[in-house]
Length: 333
Image 1 (tube, rainbow, N blue to C red):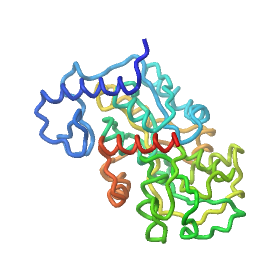
Image 2 (cartoon, helix red, strand yellow):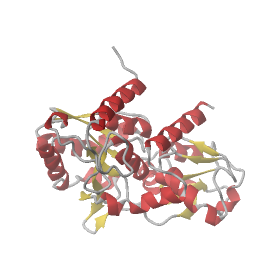
Image 3 (cartoon, helix red, strand yellow):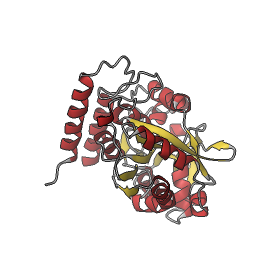
Image 4 (cartoon, one colour):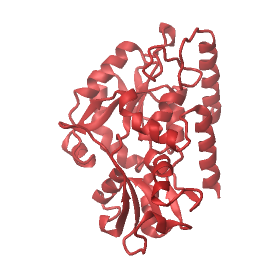
């Protein structure tokens, strides 16, 4: 019998909530009710009771769909195979087709590991109990990415203010570069989302890029590395676009694991992640990154959390549900 995603999500929330209602959680911070943060690192603590710690034979790995899921899964396959060999567990892809589904899969226990965008990672931490453990990088340190506002090269748009009243695609409500950062950074440049243009949610960065290329959208704020990967695959040509605005660097999307995995398994996953060296196809696909750098979520995601605060966003379950409903409503129109 199939159980709906919403039903599974609700059931897991009720069970987890009931369990924690019996605990004396001394500090929760911004985390949702099922989680506790008594050590103050902004992350969900591993449950103290061994019966609530998971030690599965099969680890389910999910890529939040910034890119085409099949393409991204292929790119990540060498790492997934390494994890399986290194941990001695089976590792299987658990495909999702929205960032909200990835976060709910982590919360409900159907996802043990996965990659998410910067904004989605913050929601996954507070709403899904995710523990970020790795950022892509090279010998010089973690990699960064920029928000680019792209338009067609043959368009008349030269600056952000030129886009008033135009068709501008954001990606998803929880995306940093695709939604939150534009709401914070664009007003100073003379363009206020939802006032100067109606935000149109595309669903993911690839859709925004393709939509601008086809003329469905006049412009789109996107994560620059997604456009670069699409151009490298021949899906689009860089020369078809003009970049009319660039942001400072943001931390790239992170690799996270579930907070309730057995502590010994958590340690092993970290060890396996940090000793993995990207093969040539991954180095090329991730613009020169060749390793995972450890994450200090409090420090490394401070900029992302600040952008959200400045945009009026909060990485809470209530905000997540509101923004998810908003995106779904926009998609039905």
